[in-house]
Amino acid sequence: MMKHKTIFEALQGASSFLVENGRDENAARLLMQHVYETNYSGLMMRMHDIISEEKITEFQKYVDEHANGRPVQYIIGSEEFFGRKFQVDESVLIPRPETEELIVGALDRMKKLFGERSAVKICDIGTGSGAIAITMKKEWQEAQVVATDISEKAIKTAKKNAELLQAQIEFRLGDLTEPIGHEKWDVVLSNPPYIAFGEAKEMSEIVLDHEPHTALFAEEEGLILYRKLSEQLPKLLNKPALIGVEIGYQQGEAVAKFFKSSFPDATVEIVKDINQKNRMIFCEINV
Image (cartoon, rainbow, N blue to C red):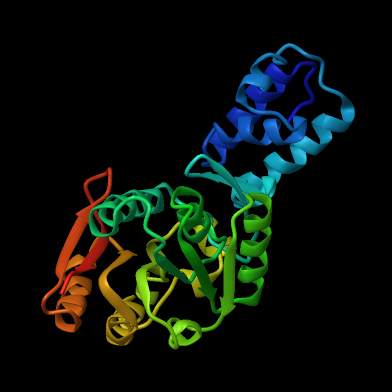
């Protein structure tokens, strides 16, 4: 990229460069906001400011990184989720908007099951950045929230986010229900790895080359962790209770079958996301 005099000109050049390299042109603005440590409005007010040699060098470095495939969120070190900023790095998945829908669905069902001020016990299995656990604690402040993960690095990142967002969360290291098996729970939420290994060839290289594969892929055509959760959770839940999991859009019937088998008297729903793709399973246990 050529060097420019104003922020506006630098953004124009970077946007065109990213498009030529098959990336989203809007990434340039996010990277420039990061360089200037400002938000959208702040950047708009500075569009005709002269950009310094130091800033243009930093900006070009980030643009080149993204053009070469590194996700913007890892470059700037954060992602917005449910109106809050979460720190992210290559140890955790980047939080997705679809997972916000899991939280909305869980909160709506919890209000009906428990009442709005109930001191429920919530567990987030496979917490990653802590997005689900921390958001649930912030949105349902009376809750006792525990978050688990098999990755020590992910737990470290999630703890940092809990501190920054002032959320009182207990973190436990371990696989699936192993760290929580000695207690009873009211709500269990999870966005587990659910991509079949055979689907890797269809995925974006940005995801494949940078996001942690242990948080993406699972055996049994991506279904193994849902099967295990459905088998392990019956003895760990109070009544009433709620289970909510995010799924791959083709996995609805298979995952619903697991939970219907383990909870024959429960209400099991396959719920679509905003794009009308099957994205969530909710299992309400009332009796």
